Amino acid sequence: MPNGFPLCMASGIMPEATPVQLVECAAQAGFDYGGMWVEIGDWTPQLLRDVKSALRETGLPLIDVEVVWLKTGPADPDHLRIVDIGKELGARNVLCVSSDPDRAATQGKLARLAEHAGGDIRINLEFGLFTEVKTIHDATAIIQAIDHPAMGLLVDALHWKRSGGSVADVAALPREWLSYVQLCDAPEPGADPSDPDAILTEAIDGRVPLGQGGLPLSRLLDQLPFGIPISIEERSQALRDGFPDLSARATELYRTSHAWLNRYLEHQEV
Image (cartoon, rainbow, N blue to C red; front, side, top):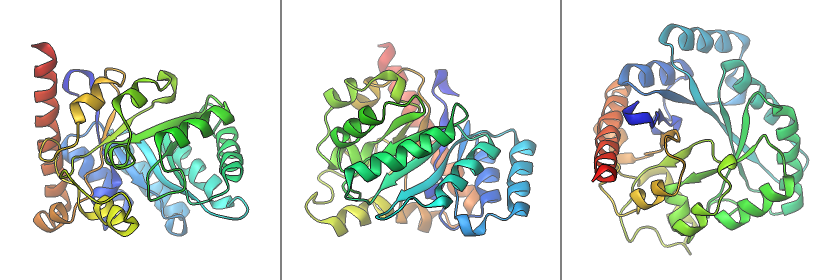
């Protein structure tokens, strides 16, 4: 943990990994936390036992489970199951996004999740142009309306930049809403914000290592609580192609992220 900033491996960097591999690779690479993708149809009681065993053996905690994806229509009971799985695994957060254009419905579904979470896990709403909660302002309004201590707001550096967010927007967020942050880098100029397909392709395939793009990462991190856990969300076709071995991929992700964080901290001390 470099000078108090825990580094976390987001599950999206290896979409082909099994849940147990996500734990093992993050631990072997040296990450302080792992992230867990929950494909609800795959989560048998045996898989839950296997993942809990891997977490116990490696000593790796989970920063989050993902993804609760709110859709149009009634609340999905599987979303409560994802929250419960997160609790069982000792995860600190649940990552949520919404494709429901009905703002009131999104608020109601998130409020239900927050009530279910209680004080055991945090429900984090992520915004982005690929969802119906497109900006930091949209997310802020929803969380203010819900007004529940189990609700948080997740800032992803790429989505924040592409949706027109500013450092002042981040600085204005209540500190108690912030459980962790997702960092990556990306070329500038990047995807056209008016092109939904380009935005989604960039988010899934076009991210680059910290410090190798043009996102204002240092300025963003300056506005967040010192020591906030940093989840490295470098979803990248180049990373997947360059490091097909999952363990090697996790190790490379840790190497580049740790190096950038050290440079950031050195600059803070000057």
